Image (cartoon, rainbow, N blue to C red):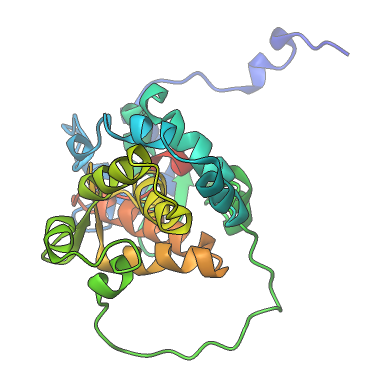
Length: 267
């Protein structure tokens, strides 16, 4: 049955702009009580950290060179949707006004978006479905032993290359740079080498770094490198992706830089 908008329009209060919303709803006023929350910064024009995200010109040309066997590995590891998003990344347009509006409504303590009269958040199950990630099954947790030791990025990247010149180029400080990894992939593909698994692992670092764990245009932390490396071993990473996005929203809500999967948030 078709329903006319006019039939229920009278039940929807007219929108009077953000200032009226801030003044009218007690639910939103709780955000004003959080020290440093951007909700109170009416002059805010641009989300902190927004300028660190832009088009990545090397991404699509590199992905178009991947051999079918390497692409098969990406699909086997549950990255089909992430691969498609990466191939179309330069066509995507982030609506930063919307992202900023969501960050303004983020409650850092409860990890909830506080809307007038209700609260909501991003669920793990939703994120896994939207990004096509392997599903986490409650009750089937494997036995995990935790060790506290420094992550050795070189030992992870050694599966890709053992040349020290390459490793020095790919890393600096506590970060891994994606462009040199993409250049290594391009070189391997043009030379038609048969390092299909290594190429797939390198491509996984690049596409997950851009789509799931973005911190800036072409760098990820050692910690996120370790998480990405576990994908090929069957580990479920949805919780890590969601936790990273939560942390990025909290950072932005308190005036720091935004980071995390913008695509997941917009979806």
